[in-house]
Image (cartoon, rainbow, N blue to C red):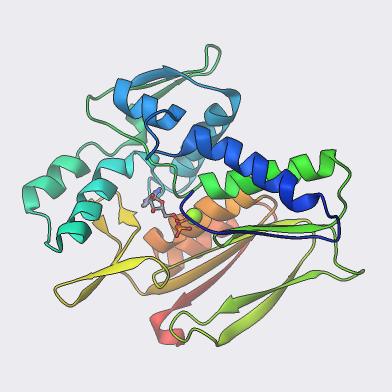
Length: 277
Ligand code: ADP
Ligand code: MG
């Protein structure tokens, strides 16, 4: 999934169980693997998918609906336009941005639940599960750990985490990094049986002609988000929800983002904006 994975547990079996489950999901969900289900769907425009892929896509649709379209997995064509811009070190032209943007709309993503068939209404549409798949994979890894009888573990997949049980009788402690100073912490949070995810403009961004660009796309413009928010940490009952919410809040900004987090049960967001630094 293009990132690191860390598993902390007293149970010596934990890392192996978690890694193999995450690898299994990567094979289904990675858009850069032409043989993955997402790779095939993006190529064919229609595919019968596994239960896991269906679940992630259904959760993405919920994220789309609840976030008024701020979270939209059909951003893939725009992600691609800006990825190429980064590669060529050249801003995309307005037409390429518009063409890709006009393909974004999860309402054109059809889900036939009974037959597990997912299809695109428009040709050239594509999906990118980068804003939710890591959280979902963490949740699946935790489920596998629980099934194996593991009572306590922290699984961290590139900043998307779940803290299972407690550590030596205490909550798991997680630091929130300062978005501009590598070694400094903004604060600490304590977790038991909860998901947490951080999305920021500092880990993945690129610079073009002296300007900083985020890897998160505003679906309305088809261009990287550009607002006051520099980092979002979301605590939620599961890691997939924390993952998509952290991405959605970066798109929506502080006020709307906070409202969105509040509309989910047992969910909190720590939103750091430029003025807070
Ligand atoms: P990270 O991948 O750094 O953990 P996120 O969880 O915030 O960060 O996800 C960002 C990824 O989500 C992007 O790399 C892209 O694949 C995808 N993405 C970008 N913009 C959106 C969006 N508006 N809605 C859904 N997914 C997006
Ligand atoms: Mg995310």
